[in-house]
Structure formats: structure tokens, C-alpha cells
Length: 230
Image (cartoon, rainbow, N blue to C red; front, side):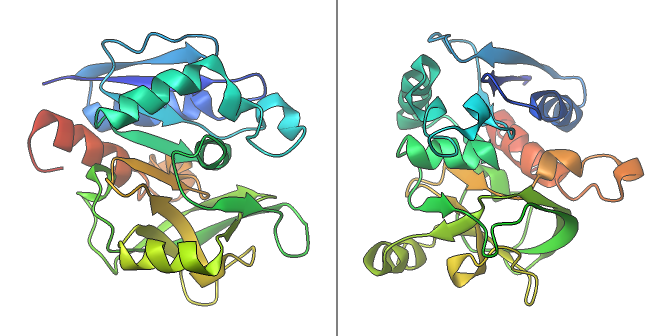
């Protein structure tokens, strides 16, 4: 079975073509990937959605806040409610939180500085099609690059996230770059089909960049859609 990916594009997106490349690599030529402009509302024919990184609307007002109200996000909410897999990366994670498809919020990094470096993540025990190719406790190497990546949730919500096993990734010990609560780098919704993370798996899919660990997320959901192991 081929997989048809949709990668959203907002004014200010800058990582959408890297995401397209990762989607196509994951399916090994058995599928397609296309950009979905933020004004589109028809996602029919798509099997999985990626909300990429960048600076949607210049991060004016608050990172991801304006994009979260875009027409396409209503369609993404319906797609997710029907069980469709949705992956938000960096600004895409912020957009999904602003659209209330994921719990919590992303605040300015401790120190308010933009960070850009390679780092390690530890895979959590969340159940998600994006994690089918990974094992809880496994370490993956991907780039960190963001300025508003500090995951925050009120104590009651944070306890629910932990109790519901919605933590998909944590920063490796000693590598939390932004002050995120619980070293959290990525979470899922309760159903597990929506996943957001601040680091960039789409920049770790080819050996010349130093790591191919990010490809596992894209292959995981492709394998889940195809009904076969990743």
C-alpha cells in the first residue's frame, strides 16, 4: 500500500520541503507527498499529515497562535478525530497546541536564546503509530533548533499527561536545552495518533547530515498505515 502525505504550508513555514523529502524517503517511492496551503480545507485522499517547522506568520502574537486558527486546521482537527496520523514538528508542535489538538504549551526557552545543535532524545512509552519503529528507552540523535520550545503544563494537566503515557520523547539526561518540565520534548494526544515534538526528525533522515534516526518516525507511521511492521 502506498502512503499519501500532506505537509501543511503557512506563510513563514521554512522546513516543509525537508518534511516532504522525509515522507518520500520513508515510503521508498511507494507513495506521494504534497504541500497543503493553509487556506485549503479538503484533505481527502491523504493518509497522514505533517505540520512542519518554521515561523508561521512570523511568530507574531505568539508562536503558532495565528496558524492555529487557519482554515486548514479545522480540516486537520476532523482528520485527527477520524484517527488520521498527524505529526507536528517544532512550530508545528506549537500550532497543534494552539489548536488544542495536543495538551500543554510551548514557552520561550529559559534564557530566551535561540538554540541550534545536535542532541539526544529518549523515547517515551507513549503508544503512537509514529513510534512503532522505536523502543521505549531508546536514544535517538536529532537536531534541536528553536527559541520557544519550553514545554509547560499546569500540575494537574502534567500529571494527566504522565499518567496517560502521553510522553513520546524526553531530552536525554543533562541535555534539556530550554527548561521544559519533566525534560519533555514531545507528547501525543490521548488517542496517540497526534504527536508533536520540538526537535527536528526531518533533518535527520540522510547520512550526510550526521544522523538518520529521524526517519524512524516517518517509517513508523508509513508501516502502520500499510498494516505492516515499520
